[in-house]
Image 1 (cartoon, rainbow over the protein chains, first blue to last red):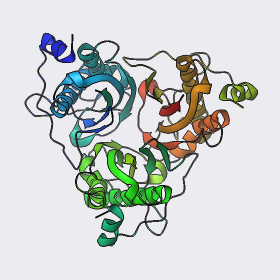
Image 2: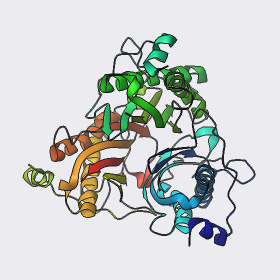
Image 3: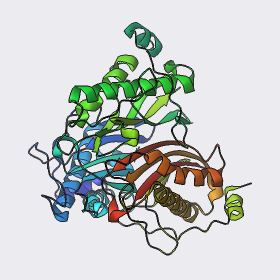
Length: 153
Length: 153
Length: 153
């Protein structure tokens, strides 16, 4: 099954491809590598998920925000590439989780995004290298921000 | 117009190419991709802009720090490559803004760097992918740190 | 001397290659570039170094944590590639140091990792581009997290 077929089978709806909130492009392609800008947890209604995990958000809510960030990235990739079927592999994700000093499960939060990519691109091609980082603040108060490198054809 | 011609027309003076403040190289080139180390907001007099946006710095001061960081990156690129005209494209920037928990306009801060690159490399080639992240602390108290990937010839 | 020969001469013992603490791969290779996931300061006994530099850790303890993170990365690279001798160059490191707001020597902390790579890969090939960032929190309370890009053959 292709990525687009898996997405359809999962019944997933992608949020609109987010417009850049500054002077940047959502994706830049160099050769067969796509560099994807840091994405926010966009909901389908055009709002973003704000909050701080460990304070006003639970781990599960953080995971949901990471998943929604992944859906926004998929929307950007489809918008830029025409179809998700041009993505051959997730190379690397760098994810930031807005966290209290005491909340230390950033990898579990980002699994919300990684599981989505595994579901859509497959358990091998959908899982790449990753770093999970906590931080005290992210743009517009969003809970999660993820950037990525994808191999494409 | 070339990047060097645009820079001259803008009347911009670059700070001296910063010497590494640790065990790293300012730039490493792999094929036609230049990986640029995290740069600080170096002033032309060899000092750096310190501060925390939302505390002792305004948004505008943060933008100025981001612009100065961009000038330092340009200086490093010219020093390493011989001329900025070898840069064909900004691929990706990753920028960190030292911020209070309440300050959430990191993308607007980093526009200070991105606008400079658009002015020098052109509105298409000078704008790449980007992530804007807040953090509680950066080396030596600097307000902004930006690393980048550039396509070169 | 090769990297493996230098490592043997230095008498360094690598910790076990860490298993991913989430949905990611330790390394993804694209062409001649290896993308290494964010690594923790794993000790040889399978525990990690936790703490916050400037609070319950000194600069020297932070450097030791960064060095141990580097040893974990070497272990992962050897496990994935079969031998460290396939690494031709350190391209770029991105390191995060869990820090108080007042501790601002993140580059000096990360030198603990970079010096190790210089010792193992050589003073030129072992030193790449780098960014040093502070943050209020990292996964599981670890003191340092480093991801990297390596050129391989």
